[in-house]
Length: 211
Image 1 (cartoon, rainbow, N blue to C red):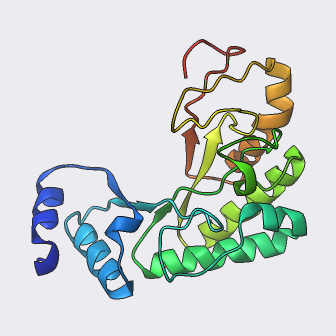
Image 2 (image 1 turned 45 degrees about the horizontal axis):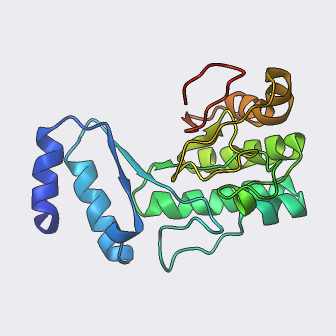
């Protein structure tokens, strides 16, 4: 039946062919409300719709009172891929129980610039091979719970000096450096079957002149 508390949202999503929605902290109150909201979204699209959240664990957490997961840099410091896979599985199980099916994670940026204002502890570390294996483990853990993972921020945000939410960064490194340092984790993510890749709002002159 039509969800009364979200009748307006239900009508909007039923009448317009949106492919999906993303929920932010201001949309989320507690377990009961989140489930009612995601149920309304799902019922308005019987053929399926992406219900997404930007829930990385660590510093990027949208669900107040949810699981407090370690951030990527903590997991990278432990360098236990089974632990990373298990943590991603727990995160995925919580999100699925709340009615979500898509998560904007994991972060696969290689933290090559310690002064980076946007990546920092969201990265698994500064070693491309470490980032690649933990990114793959995170994707495996999410996938096992039925969550579509989104590897980000392709082709790599780890060497920037500027927050791309505020300005347009440029990374002047040559293509061979970008390939060996930044692209390796994304290649591993594709091999792991990630369902989505988020692009970075960054200019890479080695490739072209646009973000």
